[in-house]
Image 1 (cartoon, rainbow, N blue to C red):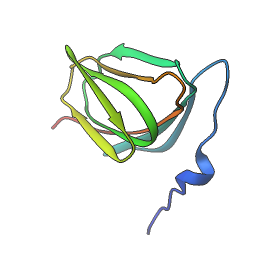
Image 2 (cartoon, one colour):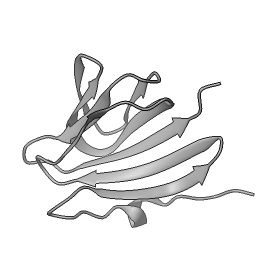
Image 3 (cartoon, rainbow, N blue to C red):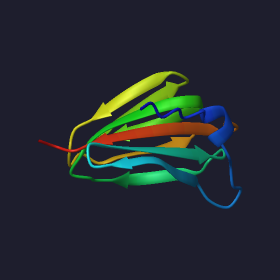
Image 4 (cartoon, rainbow, N blue to C red):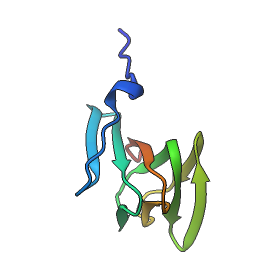
Length: 105
């Protein structure tokens, strides 16, 4: 059975905090949608899982380990387990990121 995630309908922003919504939470895959106003940031953190950060809309700076990557729409950034990762919306730009997390085997 297919599950359809219409991101256009799921995107929503909050002026005072990052909007985070878990779109799928299954043992083999988690999908979250995060919407950031300009300047908002998800500080780098570690997780014991594989991660893909997909920039759906906007522009931002993504941190993976010691690397900072400027990315815009339709860019995917892959991150290995236990590597610090995060992102920040660029000045004057909203940022929408879909994070897909899979377990480490």
